[in-house]
Image (cartoon, rainbow, N blue to C red):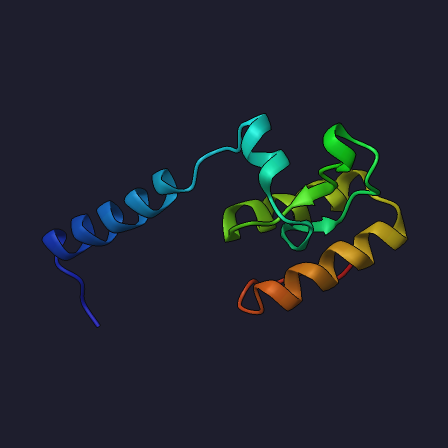
Length: 98
């Protein structure tokens, strides 16, 4: 299948718009996320009895970031938990196994 230059421009524009729509979380936004949006939920010790947790996964961008970060810095147990949480929430994300 051949793609024209205008089709390619449209594809790139749509992808760029999608990436720009997914923004970084502010501290308040992160605190407001439910525990289900974290791969490793907190233990309730933070402000107002809630600790945000680790590896937020509210969208695919953050899920991919969580996989990357846990691969670099996580324990084997954390890696397994984060991978399982991402797989449950975003089954379409391809994951490499170490």
